[in-house]
Image 1 (cartoon, each protein chain N blue to C red):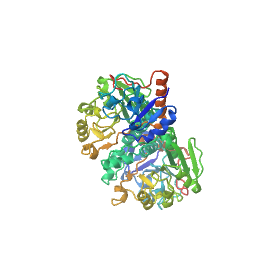
Image 2: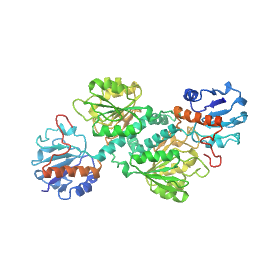
Image 3: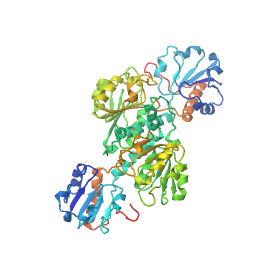
Image 4: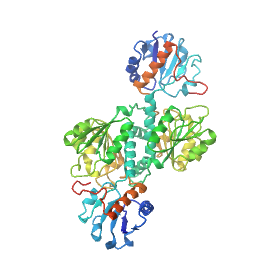
Length: 311
Length: 311
C-alpha cells in the first residue's frame, strides 16, 4: 500500500527534507507543494508548523506527523481532527542537537562569557577567575528524552547536576527534585537553570515572579522549552534586580520576537531564534519512515501525542 | 628544612592563593608581600607574572615557580638567573579549565551563536539550521597536555577532530598533522581552528596572511595560546574578506588590549581578557607543594622550563 504524503513546511526550508524523505520512503508519493495534490487524496501530512485551520480540507487523513518535538500549538487548532493520530518527532539527532545547545549555553554561563561580552562592549579588561565545572551547580527542568540526555552530558563534564520534573525521576549523577513542593529547593541549589519542559497547563507561566525570587543571586536562566512558560515581565524585573545575571532565551511568548520587544536590546539577554534543536533531516526522515511503515503494517505508532497531557 | 617563600602576584589577587598554599606547605614561611621579607632571605619565589628586572635582588634563590603554564615572558628578562630552575605550573585543574573553555568556544562557533548574536544586534529573527557535531570538523594546534585533553573532550562530543603539532603525535580519535609542510592540509580540513600552542621562535607570527589564506571560507579562529602568534593585521584583513567568519581571542600582542584597538569594537571579534585557563588554587597549590618538597628532598623537579625550547 502506498500513501499520498504532503510535506507542509512553513518555517523550515522544504528543501532540507526533500531528499532524505524521498530516500527513506521510496514507495510513497511525496508532495512538497499543496498545489500538487488534491487535499482529499492526502493520506498523511508531515509538517513543522501548520497554519491554523489547515486541517479542515483533508477528508481522508490517517496520520499527522510533526517534524518538531513540541506540538503544543497544534493542539490549540479546532480544525485538528480528533480521530487522526498526531505523532511528534522523536529524532535521536534532535536530542543530540539539544544536548549540544545546552552544553554550549551552560558552559558560556559557567565561564561567565556573558560578563566578558559586557566588558568588551565597555572596552574593559578585567580577568575573571572561574571555578571548574565540578564546583558549579546546574539545574535542568524537564527530565524526558531531552533533559535526561543533557543531564548526562553535563554530568560527564563534572557539573553538579540537579533535575526537576513534575513526576519523580531517578537518574544517575543527577539529584532529582519533583513536583511543585520541591521547586524552591531545586532553584536554591542551581546557579544555572535550564528549562526543557514541554508546554502544558501545569508549566504555562511556571517561571513567574515567585520562581525568579527563588533563584540564587546572579544566576543564569536558559529558556529552551516554550515561550509561554516564562512570564516575561517577571524575568525583566529579575534581570533589573540582579537576581538573574543573564537570560538566554530561545523561545518567546510571541514568535518571531516582535521588533519593539525589550529583550532584543537588553544587555543581559541573549536572543536566539527558536532553533535550539532542529530535527536532523537524515535521522529525522528515518524516524518518520519508521512511523509510516508502522501505519502501513497496522502496528502501534511512535510518539503519539496525548491531547490531554499536551505532549 | 623550611624555606622562605615569597608569593609575588601582580595580576591574580594573592588572596586566591593564600589559604590553599598555607595548607599545602604548613612548615614553610610564606610571604605574600615583598615588604615582609628581606630579598636575600628568599629561597623560593612563586609568581604569576613577575615584573621585569625583579630577579636581581634575590641572591640565594633555589627555585622559581610559575603559577601559570606559559613562561615565555619570563625568559625575555635579562635579570632571570641562569643557574636557578624555573618550573611552570602543571595543574590538572588548569588543564580542566582550558578544556572547558575550548568546549565553550567550539560549541559556540559550531552552533553559530556568533551569527545569532549579530542577528540580535540587528533585531533580526532568522532560524539557523546547524548540523550536529559529528558533521563538524575542528582543528587543534598544539598537542601537549592542553591540546590532548581538549581534543579528547571534543572527540567525546563526536566532533571530527584534527590536530597539528610541530613534532608528530599519535592520538586516538584525532587525525594528526605535523610540521610546516602539513599545516595547509590541516587548515583546509578544519572549520573551527583552536590555537593552544606555546610561544616559541617557531610559533611567533604563525597565524599570518598565508595561514589565514589557507583557512576554509567562513571558518572560526580561536586564539588561546599567546598573542604574538597572531599577526593581528592579517587577522583583521581575513575578517574583512570573510575568510574568517569570527575570531575569539583571549591573548593579544599587547595586554591589556589597548583602548583604541580595533578588536574591541569589531562585530566579528570576541575579546576575553587572557583568562581562558587560570590555575585552580586547590589543585595548583598541591602541585607547587609537591615541587617544593622535591627540592627539599633533592629530587628532580617537575615542569622545569627549557629556556631554549621556550616552555
